[in-house]
Length: 352
Image 1 (cartoon, rainbow, N blue to C red):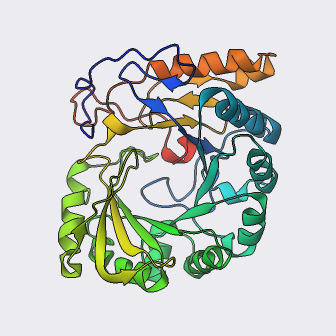
Image 2 (image 1 turned 90 degrees about the horizontal axis):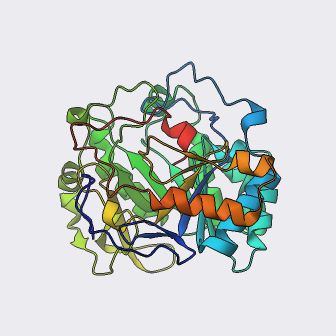
C-alpha cells in the first residue's frame, strides 16, 4: 500500500486488541519519533521566521525522566522497535546523552537515530555513539556557505560539514543527509549535492517541501516535486532499487559506479510526501516535546500523555491512551483534499 494523500482509500481492518499501536486500517506503528525540544539554533526559511518563535515554556516540556518513561512504555508495551529523536534541534537538549543511555538499556533494545542540523555534532558524536545512538540524519540544503546563511540566517555552514564528518568518524553510519529543494533558491544544486554525498560515502535523501512552516506560506506550485528532482539527477543514470522500501518513506535508486562507506551500492532517496504519499505504509507515531501524541505529522488533534504522567497515571493507562490515539489515525494526510488544513503547530514544534 503506497497510495495516498486522500483519507478515503484504505479498507478498514480490525486489529484492535493486539496490544500494539494499531489503527482501523490495519497499520501498526513501530517507529516512534520523539521531539526533545521546539528550540533551534537555525532559522531555516521553510520552517520559521528569522526572529524565531515563542518557545515552549520549560515547565511544559517533558523532563528527561518523563521522556524515558514514555519511551519505555512504547517499547515494552506497545511494540516500538525504532526511536528517532528530533526537534527543533535535539542536540541542544542538555539531557540528550542520558536519555539515549536510558533507552539503550531497554529490553528489547530499539534502534536509535537522531535528525539534527549537525551543529555541535562533531563535538558530541563519540559521546552519542557511546550512549547507544546508532546513526544520524543531518539536514543540509546547500553546498554554498553564502546560500546557507541566506537560508538559515546563521553563518554555520562549516560546522554542519564538520558534523557530518564527525558522525562518520564516530561510526554513526550510514550517515544520511536530508535536503529540501526550493524553487529559485537551491533547486539547481541537486546534482552537486548528490555528488558531494557520493564522494563522502553519505546517503542523500531529497524531501519535498511540506506545509509545515510557521508562517503558513507554503505554496504547492512553488514546491520542487519528486519528479523534478529525479529529472535533475538524470545524468547519474539512476537505476530503480530492487530492494523493497517496506515502510520507509524514501523511494531509492542505485547510483551506478559508486559505493557507500560500507562498500554497498550507493543509493539516493526521494521522499515525495506530497506528490507520492506513502500513507498506506506509514508505521510512525509521534511524541511532541510537551508530551502530546500525534498519530500523523499532519494531524490536527493530539492526545495528552504529559497530563497522565503528572496526574499519577499508570504505565497501563498511558499505553491504553496511546493505543486509542493511534486507533483514530486517518487513512491519509489529505493534502490534496480541498478541506485540508495545515496543522497549527509548525514542524519545529511537532518534531520531524
